[in-house]
Image 1: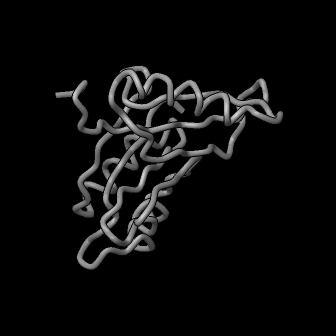
Image 2: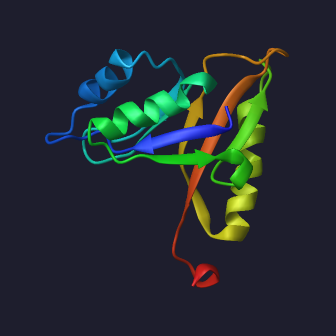
Amino acid sequence: MHLQIRSVPKASPPDLERFLGVLARAGVNLVAAGGGNLELGGEFAIVPAHEHVDRAVAALEAADYKVRVLDAEQGDFRLCWLTNEPGQLHACIAGVSEENLAAGRVIADVLVGVEPDEEGRIPVQVYSVEVRSPETR
């Protein structure tokens, strides 16, 4: 869950079903997905099963989608591991918000994984983008 693939799911006209069909035909298993305004130019983020990352990138690029592979270990997004208890998501977002405030960033989207790890924790990826401010000039 430390990688994420992002793309705008449009191939004239925007079509999320077509985008997902490319992945399904390639046999890519998704363990998390999310985004907003997906057929209005927004970016869709997917997390393929670890062994399917290369297959997903190759299939999407072959279908003329531009993709970006982001890595939590490179600081491209924040990965939190939550337990199934009240306040866990809030604690994750509070930590990201604090970091973002200092860096002139805002949260763009959140992905909640579907597969818990061996300890039963749920993966959540928080993607933030820079905003213009006096501090980020």
